[in-house]
Amino acid sequence: MPKTDPIGIFDSGVGGLTVVKSLLDKMPQESFIYFGDTAHVPYGEKTREQLLTYAQDIMKFMMKKNCKAIVVACGTHSSVTLPLISNNYTLPLLGVLEVGARQAIASTRNGKIGVAATQATVDSRAFTKSIVSLNKNVEVMEVACPRLVPLVEAGKLTGPEAEAAIKSYFDPLLDWQADTVILGCTHYPFLVPSIKKYTEDSLVLIDTAGETVDELKALLESHELLNDSDSEPVRQFFVSGEELSFYNVGKLLIGDVIKHVDKVKLS
Ligand code: DGL
Image 1 (tube, rainbow, N blue to C red):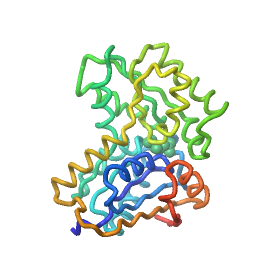
Image 2: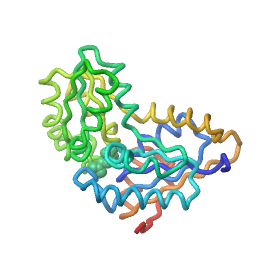
Image 3: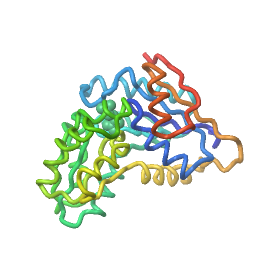
């Protein structure tokens, strides 16, 4: 497999751009294909069966595009579908769950870890299981935050709506005295300034993107797939829904790297 082949990155919408941002920073030489499944956003309210179909269709698309590795840049797929599909592929395939769990264990001082995530992720209890498998002495409280993804998809990162939603989801975590909260959905790091403002910076917020990219780098190195050529990287963005809003909000979130967005129908 050529080292210059792209890395596939996917999410329901703009959330996985948190991983793209970190990839651009840490491995700018890599080409990538980003897929935002905007025809099906938000994932948080979908069933396991629906999510499994989406994951299989997206993986098929990524295979056709000759991706050399895949980052499931989505807490929901990492929690619900990745455990079901990971054995079906031989290429490096990683999600954001375990890195989040590891970072939270390393961060907590009082042993109280909060998880803010989608309803589907919370229902799976995947974060709790992953955290407790690393350390039985910590407590975990998971909170579903269904209003946050639509806000980020609309580019509403600040203002009264974002503040009210953050208050309703973070008050229970503050009352419970969590000292560390995993942002278990990849959309949420874009709300960090608003979350920090509301919580008066009293929580360690775990953004999984950076360590996911570090893990990806190590994985590519071990498979001898790291792009060490000086060829110009190719960066492509695809969506299953409407292109314009992804283009506009995506540019707001990560800037001019998004030059063009193509719509594809997967199934
Ligand atoms: N960004 C995704 C996640 O990390 C999907 C959120 C959604 O579409 O509900 O869970």
